[in-house]
Length: 233
Image (cartoon, rainbow, N blue to C red; front, side, top):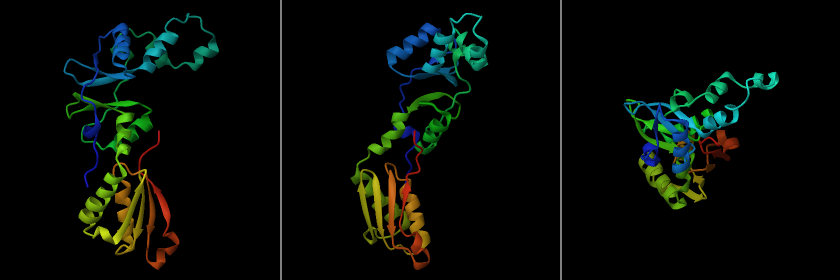
């Protein structure tokens, strides 16, 4: 079973700017292309940072404040925010190093990075750190657009038959709105658990209702629901 990777959903037409791009150029690029962030690249098209709307809003909000701000407010603002407020180019304003992924990374990995690093999009780079694309939250979540029929077919044909060499007719596989209900009697308990684990990672699966008939020693644990291994936003 082939995992869905970044290259399967990424956008290859990317808005990027050099380190010397002015604040006005950055604002115009965000507005014209309707993006919330863009990669900053060097002369060799290597990604060295990212500028987001939040970075630019910091300058707008703090850049014109008088020097004599109240002490309590000044104490609450981080030094890096004041540095951004004084920035006049992309090189000054960017967050660096950039959080990136490669085309061969899984969507699960990209989703975890977005979730843990609190970013909406990730530049995609090759082994030399050259920009080759970009992936957004919407791109990552696109795997949940798969139809129930597609998901069921992959589970029966690629997971059960090809992955475990088991006749798919031995199991009942029902998929509704991405939720899989799996019933039947596996060869042994380990096979049953492995099967549930593999199905959980099928692209588009939201959750699994495990209704397999396990051996008596695990009868107490024969019915439980497993959420898809995919971080919430």
